[in-house]
Image (cartoon, rainbow, N blue to C red; front, side, top):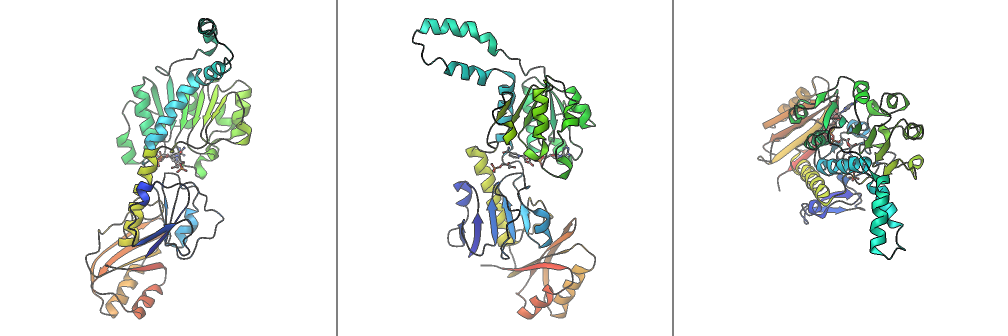
Length: 393
Ligand SMILES: NC(=O)C1=CN([C@@H]2O[C@H](COP(=O)(O)OP(=O)(O)OC[C@H]3O[C@@H](n4cnc5c(N)ncnc54)[C@H](O)[C@@H]3O)[C@@H](O)[C@H]2O)C=CC1
Ligand SMILES: O=C(O)C(=O)COP(=O)(O)O
């Protein structure tokens, strides 16, 4: 029986994919092989030694100490693109809230509760509405920083709204480049993009390279009439600098999914509580994808959509026994492991070896499971980090 420890609200559509008789899935399982979570922060928590995989039902993995887990052979998964549409829609809402007097108008109308005369109310509203006039998105310039799953969807939607779209992404993958509409103006630097645009939307991961990428200096490149949408992470924007710019009339408004104390109550800030991916559809997509990936790893040793391990798949088990092992990515390890097999007359039917940065991952199908002594010999091969035996049910 596999044990999976969960954190956060994970959609039942995903959880129901764990077969009841083979999985125990709960917040309080004692020796989990896997962890399934959303934004719960694992930094500073002791990971049970039993854990071999962590699945983030979502995109950002900055709540998981990925580097530390990699060293102990723990595979970290995420669910690329599964919640991108939900974020895209909220970005569009954010830009509309930023450009029109929707919230201000709603707040004003809510003050009219004492009025009883319909005609009087109508007259007053018509007289006052000029205070809530806005501007249109069509024809405005949108800058997108990060053109991955979310950024490319926002680009398409913004073009459909008649916006002129500018993009900056120095790390763009070939696959993401293919998804991008050709009308997106490619910018060579953040500064060039910021000085051009009326709206900025951020869709980069929270990593060292993006920490405080919007700061006092970079805010200085923007037009005073520009607005920022931050549905990425708090770490990407220096909020204190944003408040200074808003107060000094150097930024029109700031729409964000990551409120911080200095932003609360500011009249030019529209802040919501990290609800970018909080739709039924996105929660289901993420949970289903995370559970399928986790099951394929636990039951077959296959790896898809990991943020720290190479994509490695040999399909379902065909032989009686599958050995998977992770090793430091140095030369000679696979050869030494195969020597142990050869010395003990273990026949390898099929195998795959892939590497990514400092780790290599291997799947080997063999005809019969090796003895405990052979397994011990395999585990003691220099630079082998972890080893697992998967037996067909
Ligand atoms: N508000 C919310 O609920 C959600 C927030 N997010 C956040 O949005 C981020 C992006 O999500 P996805 O688009 O799904 O990820 P993605 O991995 O598909 O795209 C990220 C893009 O950022 C680019 N990038 C990396 N470093 C960069 C840099 N220094 N400058 C410019 N571009 C850079 C990458 O090349 C990639 O194209 C996530 O990492 C997460 O932090 C994601 C989903 C929901
Ligand atoms: O997928 C992401 O990166 C998100 O920020 C979504 O977070 P959540 O799963 O809604 O807690």
